Image (cartoon, rainbow, N blue to C red):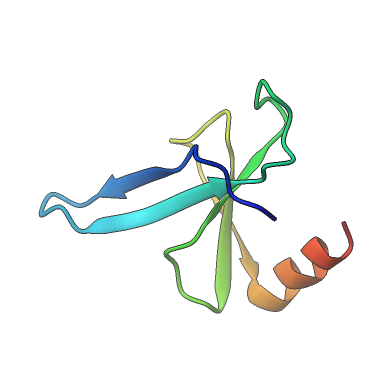
Length: 73
């Protein structure tokens, strides 16, 4: 999965980054068919969310399950 320049960083009240979300450079130009992956999380789990709903919930995948999914693409 290649990241694009469309990255969003959320910060806590003290300015510490909480999450960096990235989406595939292979996503459609309008971005309607895309997932975002959180880079700033525990390495044992990979949070994934719908790019159309950035304030919505994220789904956690185990790192090995996510790696297997990406390898199958």
